[in-house]
Image 1 (cartoon, helix red, strand yellow):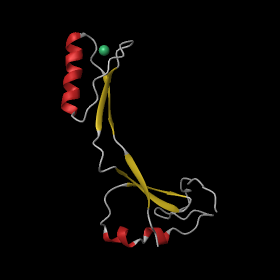
Image 2: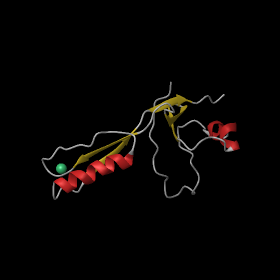
Image 3: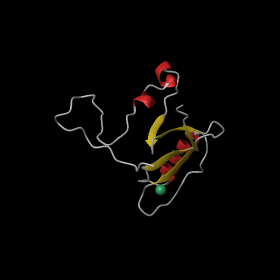
Image 4: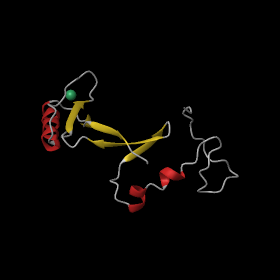
Length: 121
Ligand SMILES: [Zn+2]
């Protein structure tokens, strides 16, 4: 089993688009995958780890959750998390209305991601 190696930036003498990496196996088989060529693959983030291709997608059974917390030093207030960003925003505006100066919030959008190994044969 080959070990994971890290990509190095291309050397100045290497032509643009030349992604050959000394010591790495040829990846042309992955790049020529029929799904990739047909352009039917959904836009997903991909990564090659130990020569096995994976993709990550949002769990279709999961609804993203919006969270927000006040960044005023020492406050610690947080909105009730929920799927509706407008509702969370209303909570933030109400908090600012009741607390002058509390006008910065850390907002987050959380979901569940699924990683699948992509068959390359
Ligand atoms: Zn606050």
